[in-house]
Length: 301
Ligand SMILES: NC(=O)c1ccc[n+]([C@@H]2O[C@H](COP(=O)([O-])OP(=O)(O)OC[C@H]3O[C@@H](n4cnc5c(N)ncnc54)[C@H](OP(=O)(O)O)[C@@H]3O)[C@@H](O)[C@H]2O)c1
Image (cartoon, rainbow, N blue to C red; front, side, top):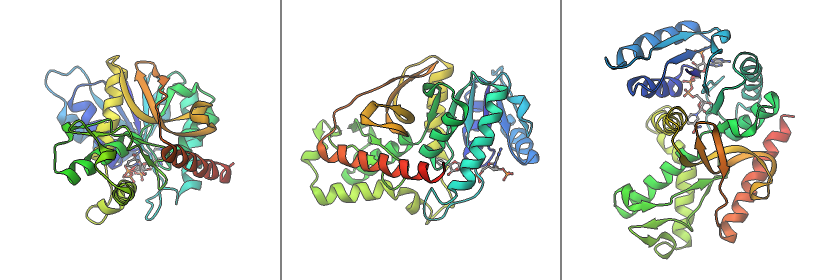
């Protein structure tokens, strides 16, 4: 069973993909019970006639028992200018949710979606003391989708011609797009762009959500698809290589922080943190990113 905590835009979009693709049974858990019930009644009509799975809504945390995976997409408020705006209430919320999960489904794999993503991934692990590789912060894969999209727009080519786009570090203003590995129609991206364009693409990927908000209140579908891919890998025992946030113990020279790094995922959660080559500029940017996340963490201890 896949349990999704938070029946807002993101939680319900993830649930819709799981149900309509007959991935597994889904439990929607929301603070306001009626919302969970209403959304599950709606999404239930997307169950394919060939599916053996169903969906239910609740506000009762004890129903989490038996969950194989728990997705946390709950939010106490909407930020306007920065994902860390509601950090205090979000950290408080994640600690409460962590206690419930430790009580009712301590063996589940946890996918963190709520912001500030890296800070919450860190505090969830700290609060539960569950194995760090079972706790996956999903966001850098969305940032990577955005990076790939922006490159494809810039060169007016389909995304299928772009290889190895990658964004690491904070799911926030210090996220680090990795240009050095990217190829565009088999040509190295770095041979096609100058410093100004690197700066401009970096700024665009970091500010993608702000641009989107000029037209729509909040994003939901990109993160839903990226989360669904992780769920699919877990449920169907597939190997998936993506960047994701995980508590680091020396990888990339970092300790006691969670941030987006390249990982391999299978039915057990993360099974490897991949070491990839970065140039000096990228290494410095990533270090700045981890420093920033650590600062936020320290402010909440
Ligand atoms: N990782 C990423 O790349 C990414 C991308 C997009 C969004 N996000 C994040 O995902 C989160 C959800 O976004 P959204 O747009 O779906 O927000 P939303 O529409 O405001 O929904 C949030 C939901 O969480 C529920 N909730 C709050 N506290 C809860 C608790 N303790 N237990 C259970 N449910 C609780 C709320 O319930 P009520 O009905 O009672 O209000 C609400 O239904 C946000 O933190 C957002 O920043 C992350």
